[in-house]
Image (tube, rainbow, N blue to C red; front, side, top):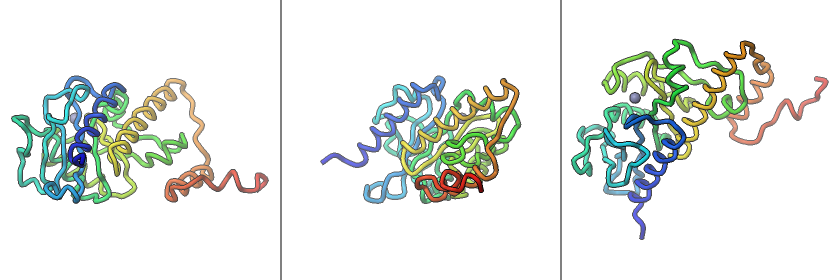
Length: 237
Ligand SMILES: [Zn+2]
C-alpha cells in the first residue's frame, strides 16, 4: 500500500516544480508546506515543509522536513541534515489559526513583489475571476522576514475565513488553500491578476465592474456554485 506520507511528499515537490516553471521562484527562495492528515497517525498535528537552501524546481521528497504545529521541534524532524524554511514559523502560525487550511505557499512572484513594494492596496472590482477566486487581498505591513513578528502579523491577517491569499509589504505573496493545488492556483491567479493590473495602469484608464455585477459575483463566491443574478434578471430591470 502506498503511504499517504509519501503521496503528500511527492505532491508537494510536484507543486514546487510546477510553480518554479511558472516563474514564481528565483534561486532558492520561497517555501511550501502541507498539513499531514490525522490518519497519518505518526504525524498528527504536523506539517511537511520545504527546507532552506533548496531550489523548488529540483526539490525531492527526501529533502522535506516535518514540523509540529506547536513548534516543539523548531529544527524539525526527518530533515536529514537540512534546516526547515526560515518562514516555518509563519506557516505554522497560519495552520494554527485556520483549521480549514491544508497547504501554504510563500513566493517572491515578480508582479506580486512589485505590488507589495508599492505601498498601494490591491485593487478590487475589476475582474470577475479575481473577485470570485481571490476576494479581498490584504497587505500585511513589513516586518523582518522569518521573524516571530511577521509570523504573528501574517497569521492574524490570514485568520479571516474569507482570506485566500495576501501580500507581505516589501516582501512577497502568501497563498493558502485546502489542498496544494488550491493554494498553487491562488498564488498563480494572484500573480496573473497583478500583472493584469500593472498593464491596466500602463493603459491609463479603468472601467470597474458595476456595483450590481460585483454583488452578483460576491454572492457567487460565497455560494461556491454557478452564477445567478444579472444574467437571469430582467434586462430592463
Ligand atoms: Zn520570502
